[in-house]
Length: 488
Length: 95
Figure 1 (tube, rainbow over the protein chains, first blue to last red):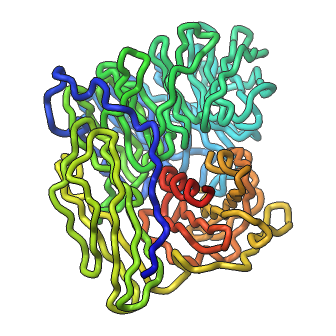
Figure 2 (figure 1 turned 30 degrees about the vertical axis):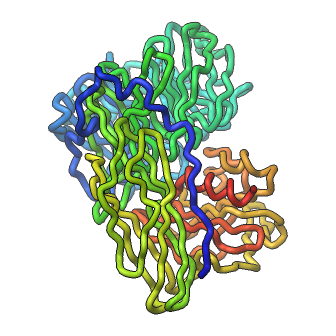
Figure 3 (figure 1 turned 120 degrees about the horizontal axis):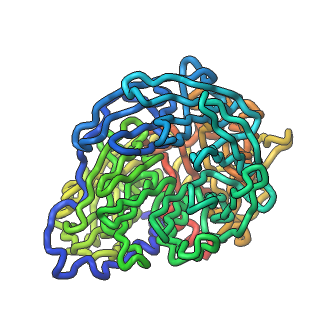
């Protein structure tokens, strides 16, 4: 027997259940339901999404700017789609949007990448929504990210270049009139505050507050350090909600708009990239990479996990959410390949099974020998989760499955494997519960086969670095995490 | 964040530019990426190790994550980025 390395997950801050099982919330069911999806091309690489009035606009990595009528969130209606003057012909890509609601214009931008090495901004007239018309486009040297229309200004986060301030004009053109970088870390996005104030999601340095009373000379009023990486934020009155990447979602008070203070941070298991406040539901929607999360804003000072929506992608695989916008009790999520609308009902409570990892690796094992590993099961819902049964592929044995889990509770489940041969094994384990979203939750289990796998020893890895040198892993004493990524 | 939390305990994170979709990135693209993300861990080019691992099937080629313990034994492989799972692994390795 080769007992193996546990993949026990230490999930923290998944919200308590306080208040969610109260007599005032007796309805069971699924609190988050899918309303509609955009049904477009299967490979779309959807990114930022914005909503205004009855419309939603979203950026795609390969399908340009899309505009939909979302008056009825259960029936998204395509309006128009455009590519761009300065993007790749084959992959018309934008990353960010800003909406001028008065003029009915959409500002679109892209940072530099392998598809289009020059950052750009383009402006579209959306007053005739089925015929988006380009009014102006221009290229820039700075690496452009999230934008916001602030009166007659366009404010743009620009990483190492800080925040850029542009003056807009009636012909659609923008002219840079101001910039601030001193005191800023890594601006990812901006949002309008009251009066001349603009809030900046400032990367690893949290939040920054700018005063644009003199647009040509922006003033940094204050910064608020936060855990994680502040990527995006949303505002409702005197409350700000911040997507903090791997740190989760932050709740910040802006009762004094010039001096924000942290109320709390709720950790999430994924990476919180976008956040939106659903006003009518008093809920904070979070795009958490592998799923969508909803937090009830209770008493306006407490975020409580109220629901989770897994992102299915055919054949049980999961996709990812990279952008989100909220309108009342509806969230519009950019689920990589499709735009999907969901409605959240705060009066509905439900159990919600969360299993990690969802693909369990086992070390190479000889025929007839046994090895094992564990998965973590947790209830991310608001009602007690009951396990009905567990089904597993042949050669797998599952034990330590709890009868039930209270909201927030977790347990470790042991999975043993005794192969009958040494060829590649791909099996699965199915957890049957009363989770309304995933009553049959399947995880993959794999072992043996070709290639370096869990339990194998790797030596002699040497990587070429960007500065022309090399990095030899054997020269490092501790553990190493290799993160293979794509830049597009 | 994982790197910041555990680098003083001996964790090394290496970001390796993948090659599975559009081929290898050029240096300028990688430097843009570093500027955009402000990562503090080293970024390296892919030297071929990616193709040697038995990656579990994922919904997309990237991200992919491998963790090697101090003895260079593979203890974690994923075709995704699961922050919670990674933190769990680190907590065990760095005990």
